[in-house]
Structure formats: C-alpha cells, structure tokens
Length: 384
Ligand SMILES: *[C@@H]1O[C@H](CO)[C@@H](O)[C@H](O)[C@H]1NC(C)=O
Ligand SMILES: *[C@@H]1O[C@H](CO)[C@@H](O)[C@H](O)[C@H]1NC(C)=O
Ligand SMILES: *[C@@H]1O[C@H](CO)[C@@H](O)[C@H](O)[C@H]1NC(C)=O
Ligand SMILES: *[C@@H]1O[C@H](CO)[C@@H](O)[C@H](O)[C@H]1NC(C)=O
Picture: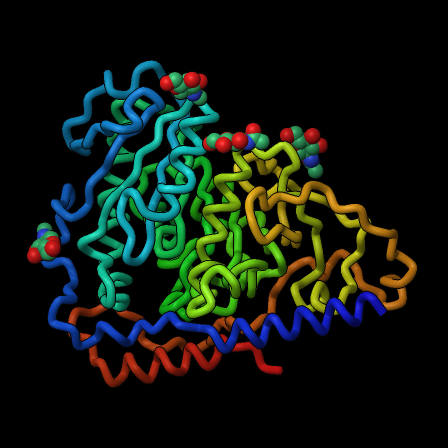
C-alpha cells in the first residue's frame, strides 16, 4: 500500500514538474543585444578569474592567466574552481552557496570564474555557443598553474553548476592532462541532449566525475553523466520548491544542487544515497533497501560508481542521513531484478543515430534551430 501511495505522489509531482518547465532558449534568438564572442582569444576580457582564500574572502585577487604570481598560492592548499551558469557571475550560484561554505570549513583556495557578459539573459543559444571560449580560457589558466608548478594536479577540483557543469566537461578538451575531479551540479540540458560527448560533461572528462541531478525534467540533465550520479528526491521536483517559487519551481529545483553541495561540506548527518537499478524502478518502489549506499557531495568516496537515489528535506538542513528502511528483499525478489539493471540507459534523453546538426558554424539558421529546440523539448518530456 505504502509503495503505491508513494508512487502516485511521485507521479503527481512529476506531472507538476512537466507543467512548470520555463527554460525557453528561443527568447534571445533575435535579440540584438545577444552576441557570440567575436574574438576566440584567451585571455579574454569577458572571462575573468578571481582567487579567494579565507583571509582574502572579501578582497579576491584577479588572476592574469598568462602572468601568474606563485606567491598568491602560498601556502599550498587544495584548489576548488567554481563555475557559474546561464545569467550568472562570480557571486551567483554556485559561488554564493559553496564559496563561503568552503572557506568557513576547509583550508582551500577557491577560484571563481566570471564570464557574465557571455551568458546574459535572454541569450541562451549564444551562451551555449560561447562555452568553448570560456572552457579554453579556463583550461589556459589551469594548464599554466600546473606547468609552472604553482598548483599540484592532485589538488585541483572543478565544480560547475548548470551551464558551468558543461563548461567543466568542455574544459577537459583543452587541458594537457585530464583533471583529477569534476563535480557537475545539475548540468544544463537545453541544447545538450543531442550534442556529442565532447561538448557535454561525461565520465571521460576527469579521473573522477560526480554529478547531482535536481531538475531532471527542466533545466538539468536526467541521464547519468559521471562515474557516480545522485538523484535527490528522485530528480524532477524538490520538496519546498512549489512553495518557495510558485511561478518557477524549476529554478528552485535547479539551485538545490549547489545548496545541497554546500551543505554536504560539513554536514554531520550526510546525504546518503542508495544505489538503484533505474529511476523507473525507483519510481515503482522496487529498489532494494539492501543495496549499496554512497555519500553524496563534497565527501563522496571516489571509488563509488553507479546511480544513487535519496531523500532530502524541504529546508536547510536538507540532509537526512542514512534512512531507516525495512528490508524489502523478499518483495523485490518477486520482480527478479538483478544488479545488471544498474544503469539508466534508456530514459527520455535518447541518443539519436542521426543527430541534427549542432551549433558549430557561425551562420545559425534560426528556423532550423527553432525546429530543433521544439523537437528536443518534446523528446525530453516523459511519455506517460
Ligand atoms: C566582450 O563583451 C562585450 C559586450 O559585453 C563585447 O562587445 C566584446 O566584443 C567582448 N569582447 C571579446 C573579446 O569578445
Ligand atoms: C557548517 O558550516 C556553516 C558555515 O559555512 C555553519 O553555518 C553551519 O552551522 C555548519 N554546520 C555544521 C553541522 O557544523
Ligand atoms: C577562517 O578565518 C577565521 C578568522 O577570520 C577563522 O576563525 C577560521 O577558522 C578560518 N577558517 C579556516 C577553514 O581556516
Ligand atoms: C572505497 O574507499 C573507502 C575509503 O575511502 C573504503 O572504506 C571502501 O571500502 C571502498 N569501497 C570499495 C567498494 O572499494
């Protein structure tokens, strides 16, 4: 009975999520204020880097990627690089959530990248087209830090939210050495569903890639993208978001990813996820309550792989610790689910064998693009 009720509730929330999709990448297509960066040169005036430590948190140092000062990075500490998304800047999500939490609790350097002029509202399509430039400039900085021995490879961790998650993946294309760790916080979906892996964050982009999905039917990707993928509250609708932002719960869902991540840095309870076959199986309450558990967020163990589902609260502190769950193995056994069902392989973000031309060349045919976007959105909605 309980299972059926839970399933119904989840389905209702799912439908609510679908109705509230607001991301509309078409808005800026004809807006004259939207532009694709004219110069592909790095360093670039529109891509800046700001270094913070606990002592300089209110007076960050602007870095010159081609003229770095080793003394700025003394004493040696781990380096966390934070990347904002669409309409963001260096004090916008994930920076405003994660940077203070890091500086308060861990002895690290934080670099916040700022590429606000390239991702202004309503220029989503242009923003996506500007990402390779942003990625190239970030890679230039990281390559120089490593080459000059200012920072050790093992200590670099890139954390990107939304479009910033895709920037993190693309940065890998320009790095001389594959980065140690990338965290994707609800990596952006519009215009990435059909794109190739070189443009989209995936497990090959770093030695370890962990991803948190919080708005799977709206702005964020549903498909697993890392070595380990976490689905708080199963992905589509985060508790509290309908109340917090009734006009656009999707933006609240999306922003939960950096909020959860910030809390995970010093959470005593922890966000514990349980491995499950697939989101569909989770939806029907058929996940074994004896499956492996993994801690989501900052403290994730880098040897974990697979998809993990967890519940999180509607207000801070969001973490709920390790859930007490009755053993359902007898019930689940009836459905003969094996460990092989551990991948979310065929969800509603299909790979097409014959992809539509992506945004590579400079003359965009807006009609074609419009068709593509509408088609993508249609594909992306769950088919009940
Ligand atoms: C930087 O952005 C401005 C608009 O804010 C634009 O006019 C300029 O061409 C951009 N510069 C480069 C190097 O892309
Ligand atoms: C975690 O750190 C934040 C400050 O960033 C603090 O407000 C909060 O109380 C801390 N939580 C725990 C559980 O220590
Ligand atoms: C940051 O600095 C404050 C004092 O300004 C200090 O109390 C705190 O322990 C420091 N945090 C870390 C992680 O070093
Ligand atoms: C993963 O690493 C942790 C230590 O970080 C260890 O306790 C655990 O046993 C390892 N798990 C696996 C599956 O190797």
